[in-house]
Length: 180
Image (tube, rainbow, N blue to C red):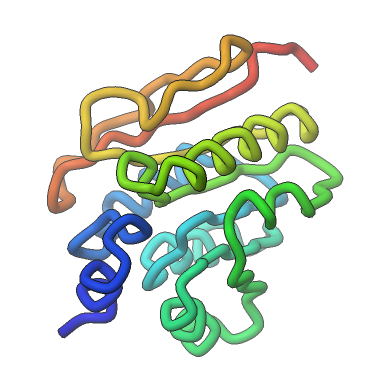
């Protein structure tokens, strides 16, 4: 049984997918991230998005966040030298200092996260995007609406729909409305 299936059975609220993201979804997320020098990947899981981020943005610093110990170990083994943080996403985001715009690339399952973790993570993402001007959140969802409701000073836009993923997924980008 795959590692993702095992984690889904053990921790369904923290594991939102039954299959790893397809290469096509990973590529769409990297494209939506843009040309940035700093990337924080939330919910790195088994690493399909991590692989494309390292390949397509080799100059960018990359922090991969994965709360589940077994998946974090697999990421460290698969990507030697990668900065893998085995902590809740909100704790990592609140502690990071980025000298310039960053892309927060997320595969977190917002619709299934426990409510307290959902709220803490959304609040932390918004604080990070306010604190690091020009930054953006790139998030996918299987539903045809934004992944979560953002504060009034942020705007979602759907970047694309990736049909070559099981199930098809929409890639959404969240940015602050404040001009910097």
